[in-house]
Length: 472
Image 1 (cartoon, rainbow, N blue to C red):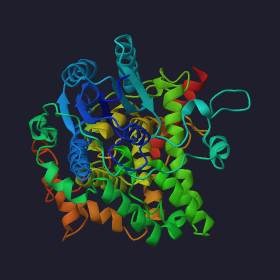
Image 2 (cartoon, rainbow, N blue to C red):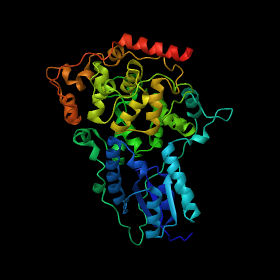
Image 3 (cartoon, one colour):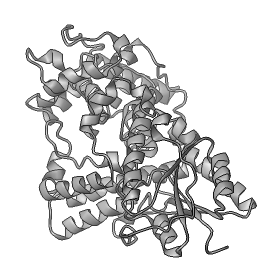
Image 4 (cartoon, rainbow, N blue to C red):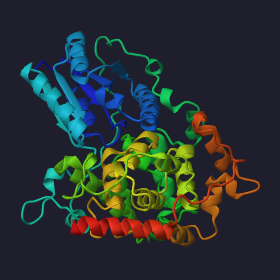
């Protein structure tokens, strides 16, 4: 391979300079590096909120590349065809990228690697999206883990890669290929008026992610175990948004958590377990890719879940009449994110009290979350629905009212997001009506609705359906 030929460095969900094995390896070659981001078939399929947020991540990363004298080339089209075009234009003899693990991206990357390799182009993938590659974590019988706790025990003391400093510079090619204008892609289009509302709650880019991690470690890690489930407190790290786009590495979080554990900080181990929960989700998606669309557990395809419906629309609108469920759904529309405890509550309510298929919720989250992650979303919905990796699958039915009393005892969270509960609602609650679709025709002056279903009746109906499934 000519030492002067360029490397196309294909960025996807790894939009950072630090802890980037592919970038570091490319920089060490001394060859010209052409950073590339493709609006390809995978990006095209994204929901409204994640596609828009990805565009902001790309914009921020392009600016960061400029600080080390480089440039991000943007192209739109089928991944393989677009890479082939860039190879022809630049004389590149290598395409490198960071691995992804969900079935859509694996299929794309496999096709790219096979085709480019046949053409004599070096197609090489690198680690970096996870701490532990899925094929390296096995049970004593050489199988993959299907339960989280044994998975945690297997990896908690394993060595991880060393962190990598950002390169100080990248060698530029003799001439840069033409780049699309990011604005021409209109990645914000389907967000409509919601974009201006949600943007105020975002923390975009590598520097913002590092600052967020530092702030969490200074001020909230000690109370993380006690506060992470509280809806009314700012007790979480908020880093899911940045992890999703690779603006920060799991390695950076792991190192910070291990340092806090060594220092005796109270919530450190719980924080490390949450990082491993993300790893476990990818572990399952890699080994059982059907989890992203089909029931993970055998025998659940026949369960009598209902399809999308008017009741599911009321759930999406945050108008179920169950205050904490509605608060959570509106929080998502205003901020692009939802508290993890709230995700469990709205998921349980939809799949059990409303007996609606988990795919309805999975698809709505994929449309609405700025921190949407293919593995976490799939595992989370199947876990809460009962068709996924849970030791107590269906008879765990959260009562949203008692959960609200426990995790929002003074109703701060509910009043923050549901305007109809206050005579003088806060701006956070009113913003929902600025962000939601006009065709919903909603107003904070509308009376708050009665519950769609009685909670006790909904629970009994769900348990009866489960018993029929077992005996049928």
